Length: 271
Image (cartoon, rainbow, N blue to C red; front, side, top):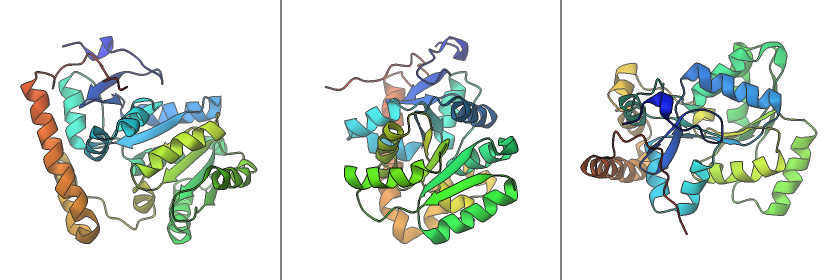
């Protein structure tokens, strides 16, 4: 097994490790927030994903989505199982969720040097979100665009981006569902090459205070999915009925193949 210090740095200039074919950034919360703020200030652009078991499972039968995750400038470890695997491989990492990344960046945005744009959800959600963000940092510069429901054509997205462009965003936060938001993040990053585009999904609802976080002990025991399922069974049952057993099967295969602790950072290629 390679040590964390020997792991190749790819794309975003920080250590990575590959779990079930998905390449993750090996960072703690502080380092992830600082990396994103620096990318915003320096205008390096790119896109960021916040990924765990759901993303891994969704990517298994969708090579295009897998390539999107693996090409991200930063792909944070959002899930205790993937955090454990990275730690077993020798990395000093923490779980970095969408809500935590937003909060950590806003708290460090001294003198409102970053101009945030919230892209997604409904006006009710983003209004609540903005109220809470301003409690974290009263100087924050933040604008909102609530996109229409459904897939956006290139022409529609161009029209939207012209509206957003006048606000001169330095970070664009996207809050939609997976993999829709990651695909949109790629499209937005091409239109805003100097502003990192960050796909945080349900992070919008958590920052807005509309979703409750699981108790710490459930997160540590990898049972946050159970807490969320109990909180919203009608919406999440189908997802977790697929994600949980499939992810356990993938991990079992990694163990059987002797790859669970392998830190060679190899990403499968697709034709």
